[in-house]
Length: 138
Image (cartoon, rainbow, N blue to C red):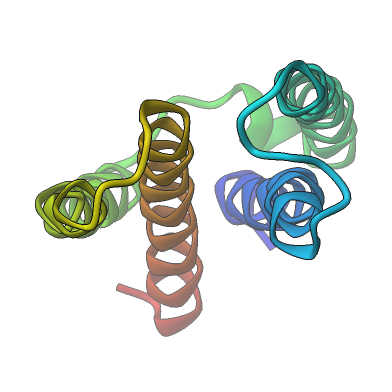
């Protein structure tokens, strides 16, 4: 498995883990999505995401030293471009869908959480697209 594919897997798992905790806590009612509890949980989850990403990508660089420091080849650049295009379209669809919670009268903190969820879903779409393209050999 190449370094770039490992990096996509790391992104997929860490984003699912960290933001799964955040949004799971809000949906289950353990934390209100409108208070300082949600803000503190969000800061904790983002900090955990950064630390996990740095640590796991560092491990990936050590386990694949040749790929970790090498510049992207044409195939990897094409995969990155296509996956980011997929992520862009996913993000645009979900941002346009933000009109629904606005229409139903959700307060601004809820809208911010919906917007954050849109970014998380787009990030997951990019990671999944990269993994599929690397596995497919595109």
